[in-house]
Image (tube, rainbow, N blue to C red; front, top):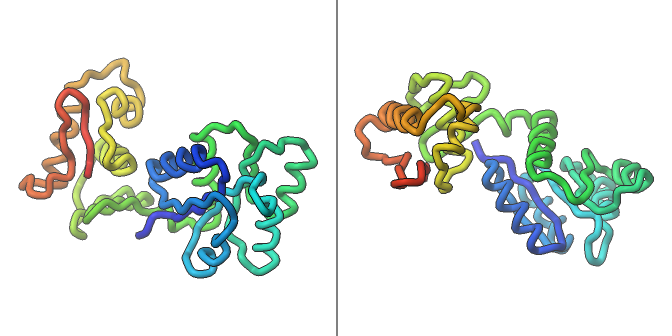
Length: 224
């Protein structure tokens, strides 16, 4: 299943790059724009799951642009991100088609949580599966398939594989894995991670031919 695709319209180039980086790391596809130019054409031609729109845009105010989309029948879920934080601004944003509203500066993790909440409500199937090459994680049943064959993983191994895939091409150190998979690094050691990763590697790639998970000496692990 394809990853959910998010359009970001943000006229600050540095912030646009930061948003794209963090959302891609969280498992989304992104298409970024510095203005509304060509956005409507893309929305008509491609399947877009959600939009993040800054209200302070060149040529047309972001919420005016979204209101125009709504009037033309394009109803893609939208989060406004803006410095406009007065009560009447927020009310106006929702009246013009916002599904959610975040005032700047905002926390990136909170934005991702809000995105997931909207997608779960508007497009539940988009978050049902996590895929990497020929590995498929079914999030509802918590089953794992490699080349369509079910692989028996423990809860910990499932969470470990999911975390690696969601952060693919990034090297995750052992402290990160202990915090995000084991949830508490206090009572565990680096050896705990090493043993679990080796066990997972043997289950999803018994011959070692595919080499999904790679060790980076002295740093941690990556899947690529």
